[in-house]
Length: 182
Image 1: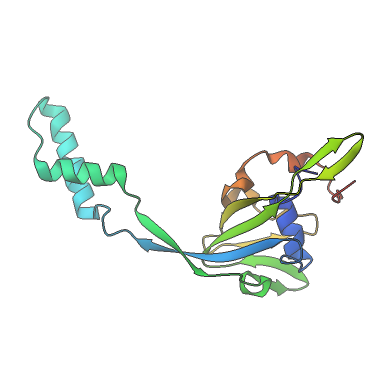
Image 2: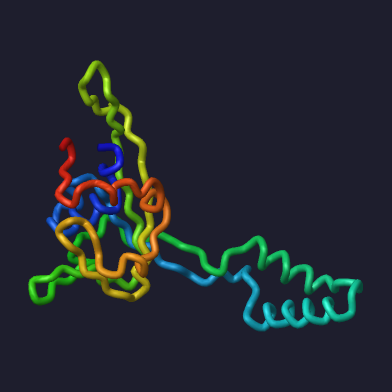
């Protein structure tokens, strides 16, 4: 139950059934923006050229501007991200064609889920009273993925994900017809 509840399989089954919000998922749109502090392509080329020269000549003084470029490359990400739409509906990131449902979205998606863990107490499964918020990210990257009723997608290796969806992939070992509580 803990493996399935809030998993990627659970999410895609909810999408297929058009019950994302009913199942407790909140989907937000994430937009990537270039980070102005990250080195430009020209600066990265200068850093690469200097590294090649450094390898061939051995020890030498490193100019301050090259040190700065290297520090910014190590310490900054190329992009910043921001939530630009909250609680988007399934119709924003899916399309139906020929009775098939597709994940079709141009932006990164943040998926939040309020998870209540289950514990076995005195032979009964008991749902915790205090939830944790799980956050996952999907990167469709302008690609399209068919969503199947069992919670799988076409080309799953091409759909990049981060966060909770990447942990404990035990839900993929559950029977394809598993329902919460089975």
